[in-house]
Image (cartoon, rainbow, N blue to C red):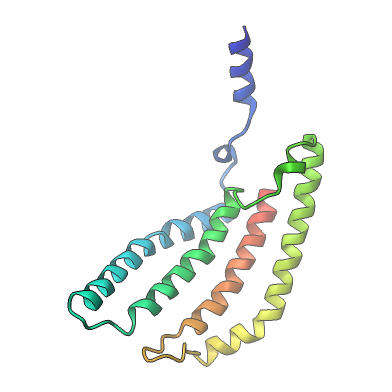
Length: 170
C-alpha cells in the first residue's frame, strides 16, 4: 500500500524533461549541443601544444589563446544550457523549507532580478561590444586573434538568451 502511494506521488512530480519544448528551448538546445563539440577540439589543441612543447621543443604561439577563446564560448553558452535545466546555483536552505506557492514567489523575484541584470549588462555593454566588433578588436598578442571582437557581442547575446530562458522557465 505504501509503495503504491509513493509510486503515485513520484508520477505526479514533474521532471525537467516533462516541460514542453518551445522555440526558446530549441535555441538553447541547438546552441548547447552545437558548442559541446568545441570541448574535444580544446583537448586536441592542448595535446598538440604539449607534444610540441615537451617532445619537439617548439611551443606554439597560438594554442593557449585558441583554447582560451573556445573555452570562453563554451562557458557563455553553458550558462544558457544551465538556465534551461534550472541547474544554476540556488540557495536552497530557505527555498526548500517553504511551500510551493512561496517558492513560486521566490522564482518570480529571481526572474525579475535576472531580467533587470541582463538589461543593465546589455545596456552598459552594447556600445563597447559594437565598437569592438566593428573595429575587429584583437587580443594584442603575437598571434593577435579577434577574441574581444567576438566575445564581447557573444556575451551580450548569451546574457539576453539567459534572461529569455529564465522568463521561459517561469
